[in-house]
Amino acid sequence: MTYAGDLTPQEAWDILESNPEAVLVDIRTEGEWQQIGVPDLTPLGKDVHFIEWVTAFGPNVHFLSQLAKIGVQPGSETPVIFLCRSGNRSIGAATAATEEGYLKSYNVLEGFEGDADIYGQRTINGWRLRGLPATSYAAGE
Image 1 (cartoon, rainbow, N blue to C red):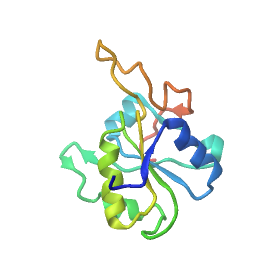
Image 2 (cartoon, helix red, strand yellow; image 1 turned 90 degrees about the vertical axis):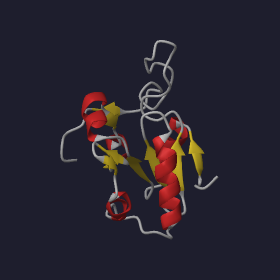
Image 3 (spheres, rainbow, N blue to C red; image 1 turned 180 degrees about the vertical axis):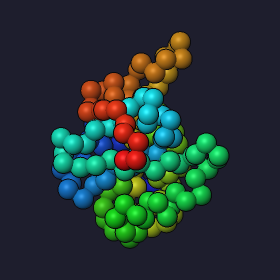
């Protein structure tokens, strides 16, 4: 594995709750944030960081520089937890962050929406379906 590891949505929440420095980075697209919703960390007194891994124009070539702006320094022991729709894109983000020196980069298995059922609907698992806090997205967050 080329990053710190995979976490279930509940494990991610538990780390965010128990470690005041841990951060959550939602790497989905702005359209996904607006249409589907986003994790809500206000019960923990934290903000979610929104950085697209892939934009409407292709890979986000500014991803790592945008990641650097959230206040976590490469080489630190701060857990950086990456979340996408289903836990696939966030593997790439966690891997790239690890290569950049973010030593505790994690992927959230199942993502925000989870896996698709036999009808193509995301009704099986994921952050939202596990009952973890979620809310709507306000542009410019």
